[in-house]
Image 1: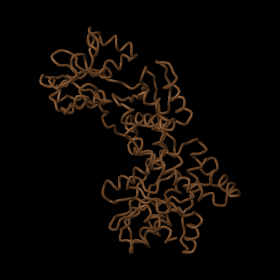
Image 2: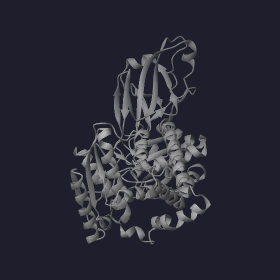
Image 3: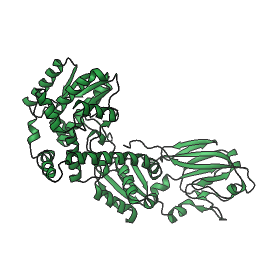
Image 4: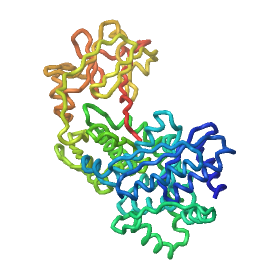
Length: 487
């Protein structure tokens, strides 16, 4: 057992010599074994331990006896003890939340508070390979993708570690029995009204008749899924920066970008958009409810496969103006070229517009529309002078000699498209391109001497492109501002 745990610690880089490790001990067999194992390894590994206990007050006197058991165990091992108690049921009722999820949020919130207050560098919890298998099955039965199949993460944000995650529960029990170490039994673990208990006591034993190594198989599946998710995160980051735009409490998804994506990528982009809108902290929660990511073992509250598929159908096939309700009171609405997601009933401030003076070269950030604009003077050859690069616009460099203004479209704005002899109202061009009123209000233009010389999507106005013999041009590039809140 000691060798198994030591391999797991080293495989995942769970502990660095000199760290302070808080061991979350409920008094049950897994966490009791974890405490004793880490205590035996501490001398050789060079870390220090303390014991933490969270009393949920869900089982009355039995809960208090669990706390006393852990306190005495810490005294016997001569380790510091950090304990706290919360009325989890009352907190769940106040938040109108699931009891088990509330318990997890409060418990992990306590662990985080110990780390943030300096009592520990990391907190070790006692999940085993059996817990991993139960979690994967639970999520599979409810419906999940590879993100959910990743199950319980061995290390979370360099704060929570799970040294027993590769050990079997029966091996843990044998190890405790050999050492004649008692533990506490949680009577609620035998309650078959709970789905996880039915998975533990009924479904897994039945599946073991088909595959005696079902626990190891499910744990291997979780490891593969976590590696897949790590790949997808790096792969998706630049795609999300191009496809999602966050503004005023909502997220816009570029439908044309979505249309060109493989379905697997498009679904993940939409899931990311849902998570951004549903970021914890937008609503009020009772004090002590930790705002933690799904990797802490908490419910992500994200949409299921069917909901994401209907959202994709709305984006690609639905009519402009169509809506769809999603989990966490999120509403999606299609507006011509964009899919907008926002919290239902979210109050939004009136859009007041934006106006930024530009002295090229410069990078101008426009948080009102979630974009930044780079104005750069670049050398040209004749070919570059005639044709704009893909995704950028090239202006006559002499335009930069006069004061430039980057602002939003305003009613009455006129613009002379390249190749046209007569200016037209931008409103007419917006109508032709099916740009919604909300988008028009935020549409960026660049003005020089009271004349629009550039507009997003329409390019350089007639007469303002670099002449054929130009040696220099003013390049305008728009990029999305970095969005927070992705996990």
